[in-house]
Length: 106
Image (cartoon, rainbow, N blue to C red; front, side, top):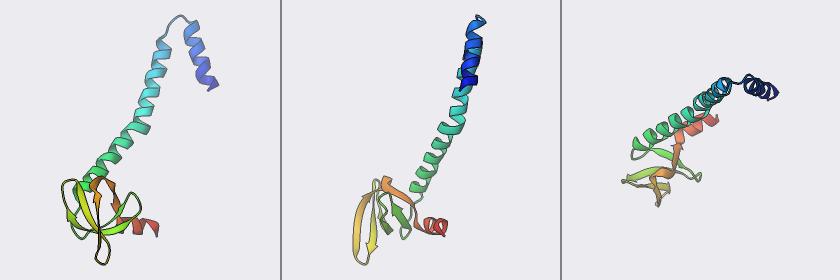
């Protein structure tokens, strides 16, 4: 932090604000590649997963409920969480594929 402050003071003392603009743009580029871009990529992966849902697929909801998809509609899915126990949930609350979750936990 002290080094950054020293560069900013030096740029102001030299009479030109060019160094300040270079540092500001550099910080934005770093933020884009380390924060914004990975988040957008993850959101696209989740959207593609939700579009590829199929009947009889084991899934986990955002609330941690494990179940099997029995019916798919435009905005909701019907999950069977036990024998003859079905719940209707919003499609956006499907979190992950249960098989992939179990393999990652081993």
